[in-house]
Figure 1 (cartoon, helix red, strand yellow):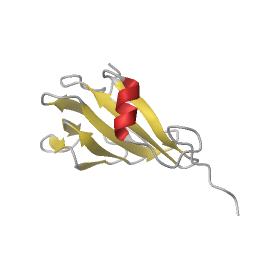
Figure 2 (cartoon, helix red, strand yellow; figure 1 turned 120 degrees about the vertical axis):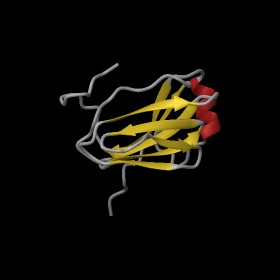
Figure 3 (cartoon, one colour; figure 1 turned 180 degrees about the vertical axis):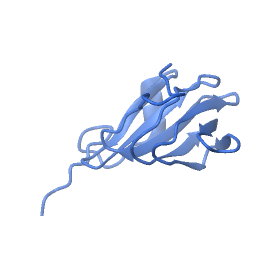
Figure 4 (spheres, one colour; figure 1 turned 90 degrees about the vertical axis):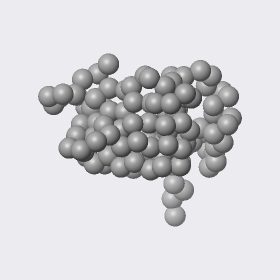
Length: 130
């Protein structure tokens, strides 16, 4: 049996603590890879209120867990933004352009989970890096 490769915040660790990560990173914006396996990747991402990310899409589904704050997600084809707050899950179907806007008075922290090696893609109308 092969031992699975599961590098986390500290290589070889199977557990990480959000308060320790926040303390180590300082003021937003920041991001940190927390899971990198052969198949999946997960990042903890912190943005201050009012700092949206770029409009992009992916070739694989992506989903998020809001850990702190409030975020409005704009997903192609949705009738209205999805307003999510700490404790909510949001799903982003593959091939749909999306971006988000942290709202409220505190920094937002989310975990983004998707396929390993997936990145922001901009080669469609309406998608562009900031």
